[in-house]
Length: 157
Image (cartoon, rainbow, N blue to C red; front, side, top):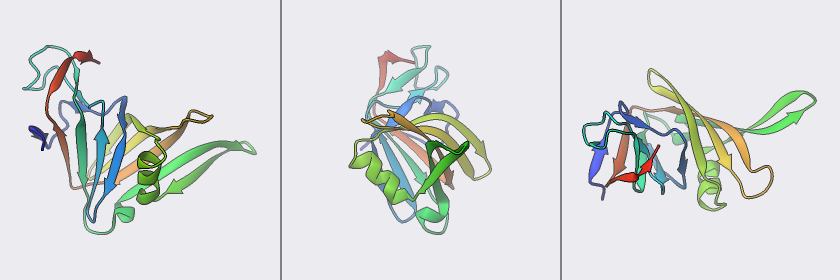
C-alpha cells in the first residue's frame, strides 16, 4: 500500500502532525495522518534540502505482549477544579472513537523517548469550545513503522 516504510525515526517527526484516524489491533495501534508526517532534510530520500511533509501517511506502533490498554495510556486534561488539574484517562478504544467518529484529530506536539516507551504531549482538537484539550499519550512499543508514498515539496515545515 505504501511505497516507503521506515522503522527508524532518526529523520522523522510527528511534531504538529494531526492524526485523523486510529485503528486498534491485538498488538498494534495505527494512526493515519491525512496531511502527512514530517521528513527531515537529512533523510536519504529527501533531496529538497528542507524538512517536508509527506502525502497521507500512517504510523504503526507494535505493542509488546499484553492488551493495547496495558501498553497505551492516554490522559486528557479538562481544565481546573479547586486549583487542581482535572485529568481523565481514556482507554485506546475511547481515544479511537474520539478521533474516528467525533472528528477530533489528535495533534502530536512533543515526544520524549526512553527504552521501550515514548511519551507524546498532544492536543485533542474539538469543534466546540474549548477548541482543544491537552493530553498525554504514553505508548510502550517494541517497534514503530512510518509509511508514506511521496514527499510533498510544496509542504515545507
